Length: 113
Length: 115
Image (cartoon, rainbow over all chains, first blue to last red; front, side, top):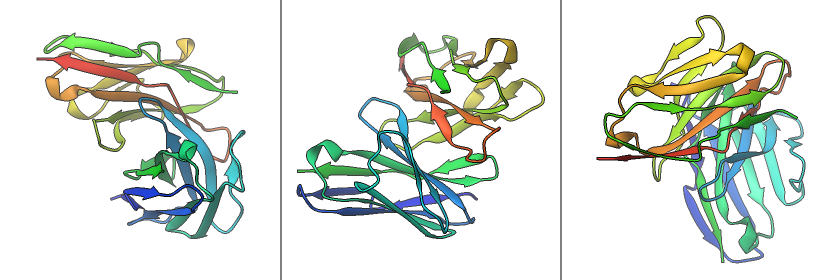
């Protein structure tokens, strides 16, 4: 149980385009999901907390208009990287909270050309 | 702001050697503690967790960790490592006094086990 999926697993896009990443909790409902970013050989940095039915809470330094988060249902949160640039290339990981644990998705590798 | 420190950035061991990875956090309130492992090219997997009770917790693959509240530490141990333990290890702390339950991760420790 407690499986979290992400789609796509990898994406390559041109600079200036927008990319949407989906995070789904497959066998449980999650009112709270989290989005992390991981640079190569570095740790996970929390970007934002996604709350079902309300606005996301962004960490300091994360641009709200750049990284749009929508948590429209109890099993789905989406992260849209708008007007992507090469510096947005990274590994994006979501997690879904179940009671006092977080279950992680497999991640999405974004490469912006 | 709370922080999590992993002092060992890169550890190289021979097979059968004992392992101890340090993790310290800075937060005076109630915490849940986690160790995750990330094998090359794979996603995060939970090794073990501490919520309350016995401060010595056992996880998967022979790993264990000890919570020492007075030292704000949660060190990871394994008596005898294997080549397959080569991976990145992350300590994480969840603050229980806030409603958000977000995780703060340490910088990670890369473990390289030589056959």
